[in-house]
Amino acid sequence: MSAEPAGTLPIASEQHIILCRQTVRVLCTQLKFSLVDQTKLITAASELSRNTLVHGGGGQMRWETLERQGRHGLQLHFEDTGPGIPDLKLALTDGWTSGGGMGLGLPGSKRLVNEFDVHTVPGEGTRVSITKWK
Image (tube, rainbow, N blue to C red; front, top):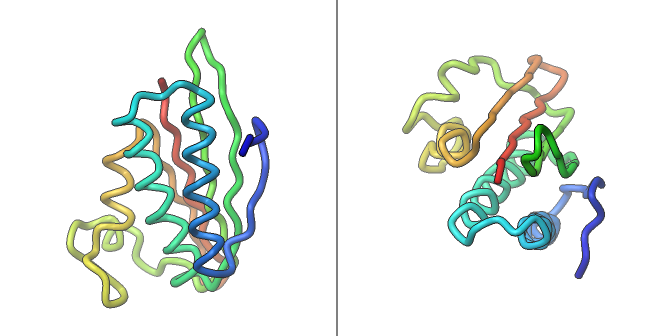
């Protein structure tokens, strides 16, 4: 399996979450990320793709490989047009959950990457962007 330097995958089922993880693994391998960094980014992608499906009603993952000042990175965007996050500060609090999970999705993902950004509008959807640099 080879992944393009930029692309989009739908997130509409459990199988799509698996495909997102596999794609991120291939991209991390192509960028020669360490095994630890691969694991961190794949874990964050798994959590965020699941959030996109479960809380956002589905959406997409977009990715792009980056090169800035001689550094290589991978940026992932998880986008949905679901209900949005009514209280982002609360959602970024460890242990808080809007569902039956452990409350580690957003704050846990944030700790696993170098850059983390959330844009959400209640009633319009959410976009979470993460970047991992090598």
